[in-house]
Length: 189
Image (tube, rainbow, N blue to C red; front, side):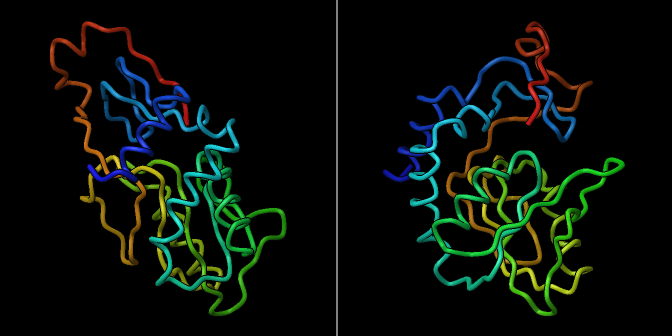
């Protein structure tokens, strides 16, 4: 692990954003580790630092706008937009599907960066990429704080993660005994 990745992990640990126990992830999988990014997001100095570490990885990707899925991507998306002086919009759930609301639109060909906090399987990122295309924009890349798949999740645009980790995940009917012995928590994203 390089020094930047260690610093990121230290920030998550220090702020209480990396939890240990028995968790049900948004994907429905179970894990002994959970990134509760809301804990780190309440510390704006930490968010500013995480974004400062992420931005050099985005140099090659020119974008006009940042799109973040609510709730998880809101704070990091806004901070990326703030530091890059880009426009910022977000997608939110309506009937259990992410949509653009509040009058948000993309100009034809507008270059859009999707920013998310934590990705395990990438369902919300895929929804955001579809939203951009359906609205006439052009997705240029996906940026995230944590890639829980350690690089195995793939999208049809470049993917940039600040931290790549692969904590084991399990289907509900395939839990190891040490995990099934713990009370289940679903902290929310």
